Amino acid sequence: MDIRMLLATTHRVLDQLRHDHRSIALILVVPALLLTAVYFLYENEVLPPGAPRTFDRVGLMMLAIFPFVVMFLVTSITMLRERTSGTLERLLTTPVHKADLLFGYGLAFSIMAALQSLVATAVAYWVFGLDIEGSPGLVVMIAVINAVLGVALGLLCSAFARTEFQAVQFMPVVVVPQILLCGLFVARDRMNDVLESVSNVLPLTFSVDALQEIAANSEATEQLWQDAGIMAAIVLGVLVLASLTLRRRSA
Amino acid sequence: MSHSATAGIQATGTGGAVVARGLNVVRGKVPVLSSLDFAIPAGQITGLLGPSGSGKTTLMRAIVGVQLVSSGTVDVLSLAAGSPALRHQVGYVTQSPSVYPDLTVEANVRYFGAMHRKRKTDVDEAIAAVGLQQQARRKTADLSGGQLSRVSLACALVARPRLLVLDEPTVGLDPVLRADLWSRFRSMAEDGITLLISSHVMEEASHCQSLLLLREGRLLAQLTPEELSRRGHSNDLEKAFLTIIRESENNDGVSPGGRDAAAGAATDRSGR
Image (cartoon, rainbow over all chains, first blue to last red; front, side, top):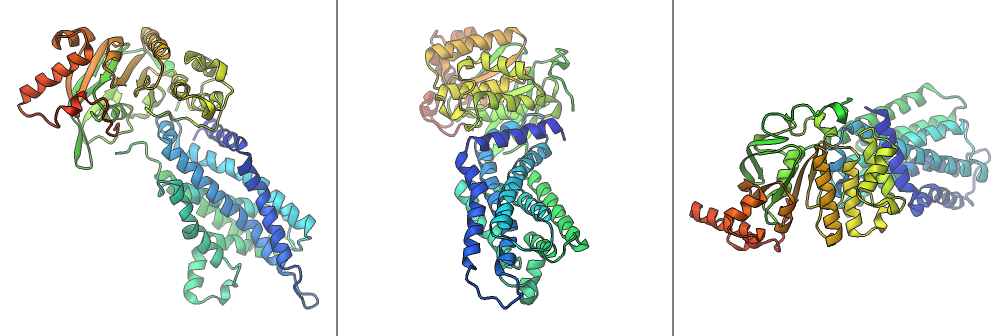
């Protein structure tokens, strides 16, 4: 690892993004807009007195799911371009270490993800009065971990796509099942055994679990840190797998 | 790792900057390079010439160390091709420019420079060396094709490599720029840099001090341009090359692949 090469990579990725105003808007504004839509979806629900709003549950989970989806897409396409344009092969003829590249990418998109979730979380709290026990700082932390998970999976999946079209096709395969089974639609303990056991090993499940911990407790709980730790371990594992797809020599 | 590029002008080994012994590359089941033996002299411009599909790019990739080799060895600056210690010392410019179109010229060169711990002055020098000072702050995507390939070249120059491997660097450039680039290459060779430059245009051979003639993955000859025109009985290097190809076919008895490919700069099979 060479921290200067890592930071140069981060700087370069952010520089590329800076020239792309639409992508920046997509990253920063769209989650907040979707959150607005979710709020108005449940605007007229009739609640028994004292019951929590559905928005407080669904909106909260959305805060973690957006960064995951957006960063998965952005990363897999960016990395695929790097592979097909020859710049990746060129980089691998230089002294740069694979870890510098992958973590450089990870850091750049984590910064974007942090900005994204700050905007979305601020909107959720201040505009729509999101009402949960725990602190918004922890929500942002989980959102960022989720974004890095999206980055890591995107880096990995880009190795198995030859075109941008194929890369986008990984969305339904990698992202959608996690959203379906993470506990957003049906509580996980009410799934059948097969689905629940699949759900138990999907990374997004842990972040939804962590968010529920944050929602229910005013202080960070043991369970929250355990979930965050497992997520971090999964992210590292996926990054290691992704680094195996970067070959200095090819046929 | 801190292999400084200035680490040494010491021994370029016994045989030359690049030494290949019994090099074979097979892709799929097709032999792309067949038992190549040659040495590339240090501090000179060596031209790698042959029709499209003759294996030029594959040979260059083997020298840079990104090509999986079936058998044989390639030594570069006395180390096995692709050794980590060579990554500061070997520059490679692919045929299609591999740069980031959404960055400025300067940002591209700065980024590849950062991989070699180079500073702002090195970046400016590399940009000046390809004559793009005026365009330094422009987005690479907005440049012309010829400018784009010069950005790609600058991204290799910024590392100040001792061996520079250039795959068809003059394709698509106008005559003025081409002459300009060749004179830059000459002055780099005078500074002690070894250059290996591929081309399928035989007239460019005259700019080189030594030539490798490649055809269908085999090395037809290694000679100087003067020897080429003598052996090929023509001052027109294109004709001389054709004559040498015909001679080698007659010597082999069988002609592999037919004559079209011999003349065939026009028929572009995949460069690799």
